[in-house]
Amino acid sequence: MHRPLDDIRNAALVAAFCCALTACGPGAGATSGSVSGSISGSSAPTDAAADERTLSQARSAFATRLVRRERDGGAPPVPPADVYGLIRYPAPGGEYSAYLTPRPATPGKRPAIVWLTGGDTNTIGDVWSPQPRENDQSAAAYRDAGIVAMFPSLRGGNDNPGVREGFYGEVQDVLAAADYLATLDYVDPQRIYLGGHSTGGTLALLVAESDPRFRATFAFGPVFDVSVYGPDMLPVAFDDAEEIRLRSPGDWLSSIRSPTYLFEGDRNGNVADLVRMRSENRNAQVRAFLVPRADHFSALAPLNALIARKILADANGGEPLRIEEQDIADAMR
Image 1 (cartoon, rainbow, N blue to C red):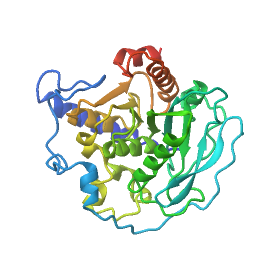
Image 2: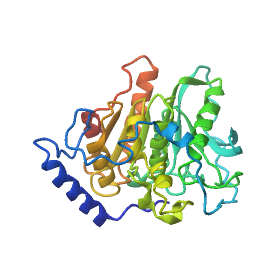
Image 3: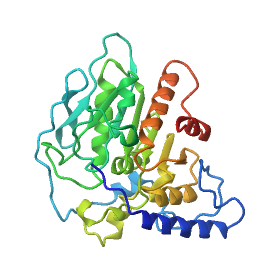
């Protein structure tokens, strides 16, 4: 389903960042927990750091040029009707497929989440079969908690119209999925969340940087710079710096205007990317956590269960959703 980044690359980058941070003063090289806008010791400013535009503003002044036109063409598998329905939702390029939990048996408005799977994020597949706790990419914790869950496919994926744009137009597709959820009479439009894992986490982060409508966003294992995915995943000129920059969430953290949480296991995966985003972040809306004793996959089940509990507590009049380092430590026990 998903190919994690090479552990050697991560180790080298973590070491490089730790050296750079240590040189900037005491406390700058911390490698766990969350970092607020007051942390010191960021790397040298990138072109994006000097760009005062938001991601949406920068994209509005740019026309992406695809060098390949790719689409899947295969219909999504049909899920068990008591777990998910296979629906179509209106999107900019036409109607796209999605999985959606069944209509609740009791009346009332409920919180909802849009979830973006890893690997080929444009397509959807089996997210209903039981998966091992150490690698549970089904995000089943949300449906198990009674939260409305939607897994959208995106342009060029499955049998959808359009072609893949590699983290570009897909942002608008995700927003269209949220628009669809907001029309359902059993969904609380003020409590729609966004989550994703790996490539889905990268896209979720780009969506959060583009629009503040989600009550909170949860990005598991995103990357700083999408060029690490390689040219096969990006249908644009790989040597075009602006095409890459406008798809790379690490360059646009300052655009985020709603609570956004970044997670990665501390054992492998995209550790270096999270360390870099955490060290360069100056936005109080963004909190980044290295998850203890977890890898790119094993953090999913316990933290999705934690997030589901927090979402329900928020919906039931409890404290507004906020995740602290102690919450994560407790969830990983």
